[in-house]
Amino acid sequence: MQLYIVYTVLSFTVLLSSILALHFVLSFTDTLDTLILPDSPKALNDLKKVFCPPMRSMQLLVFSFDLILAFYYMFQWPLLDGLKKRFPFFSSDLKTIEKADCSNLLLMIVFYLLSKGMALTICFVTIGKAIDNIHTVSTDYGVDVGNQAAIAKLNDQVKTLNSAFAFDMTLLVLMIGNFILNGCTMTKPMRTFAAKTEVDVQ
Image 1 (tube, rainbow, N blue to C red):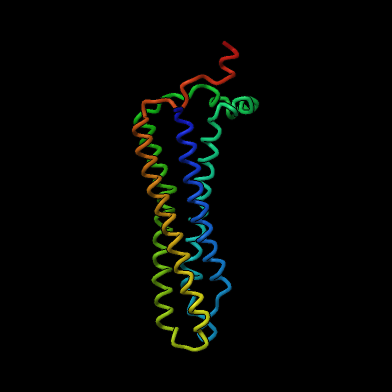
Image 2 (image 1 turned 60 degrees about the horizontal axis):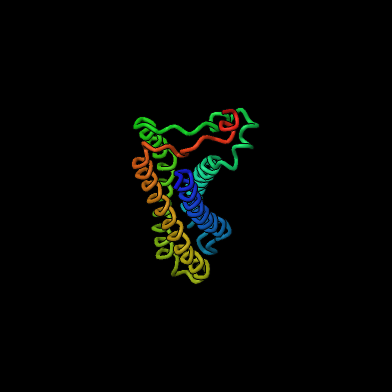
């Protein structure tokens, strides 16, 4: 099987997990924006002003990263060679992709870790801290009768955050799997046949 097919399937699996993680994070932040404790209006300040902004922005960064990567691997398919030849920017992609060396693999891993890896780490930390804060708010302010309905709705969001955390963990596992796959296939080209334009010229 051609490697570009394997990488495309993997990248779209990652993209699906990223979409689901983003969905749960945005669902939580949107719900929290409309949630107020009537008897303790400032009780949710840490959640709204400290944890939600980086959680939302980093999850969007992870999604953008995965989306770009999925489109990159999709552009390696031979079906798009005719389209790519019309754009000079993609002219280098029309040639058979060369085998990667160890330095390229290390650079790729470093790039992943400094971008997506750091973003996922921030997501893990903010989601974990948000769950702890929800438990604290529930314990401290749940005794007030006026807050009980809002507290119940807030506690329901723990499941949403746990789902986001699970899909982020899936993204981390898939990222490590991608490193292993790249290492195992380092000596193999992504495509073992020339692009259509090259064949036509020959």
